[in-house]
Image (cartoon, rainbow, N blue to C red; front, side, top):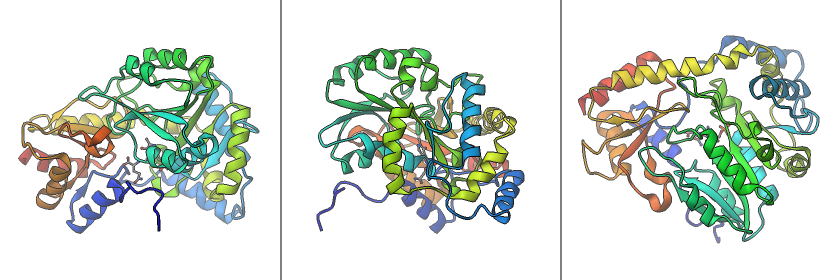
Length: 378
Ligand code: PMP
Ligand code: GLN
């Protein structure tokens, strides 16, 4: 067999979660909460099953869900997406990303991504014959060098993938970043894929800079979102994407043969749940409390934190502790000390190792305390 992805091995999320389970370690590696999602939401999905939402949904998604997503855009960003033509419900953000890339990328097209990058972008680009053009964000602040982006942007650049709030670093795009991106892509055919799965997990009263706030950018962009990330049920794999009609039409042409439609009862339950905006408006505070608690618990440890600005991840620098490679240290922390994290080098250009690990703080207070007790001993 000739592999279509010869350079890809098992995802670090599987590796670290399996290792954590084998060693009974506290698992702050793969990003998922260890608390239940709201009972109200679970009841709504269960009601949906009991009242007959058990057959195929419409191809673009349950219409009530698309309508309530459109309302959310009006409320939060004062902008409109037509629920009939500009929103599609997907099997998590991952499927949206996969389908967007396979809809638009042809062999030899160039796609700019920022490293460290979430792990599904590059393999999907390569499967479609595209060329990944990486721009490295520098630790510890992970700011973007827009001059470098500009120097790598040309007429073959078919797409730029951005992710704010950013996994794994916890950095967020500023207004200035968005304006630079808007300026760079203006009057081109470049599509922007904006991965905004952590839009509701952003701290210190900072405003999430969605591409839809910038009209010129909005006109060329897909926004990708994940209900799993938003409502603490990553296992349901339900998300959505939005884009102007012409782009969404092309997307749906592929989506219909990719999955056709996704899990119906969770769509109906989410549609009912989203009728109450407080369910997402409360999230930044909910997660800020967890971030602050985690940072406070480890403030006297030898790990150094630059507070996460968004996402439910905190990156910690361990260079005062050891010189070990981050993958080795992450494994040793799991097997010897009982705490699992994600080494950042696997997401970096040329696997650069800055001696930083990512810890997921979407955990109960009890788990965060136990995790901190271990980190404080190292
Ligand atoms: N993008 C980013 C940045 C993520 O962290 C994740 C993982 N949660 C995804 C996309 C995929 O989301 P989903 O689980 O909804 O497929
Ligand atoms: N998005 C999650 C993370 O960053 C993991 C999702 C996955 O396991 N693929 O940890």
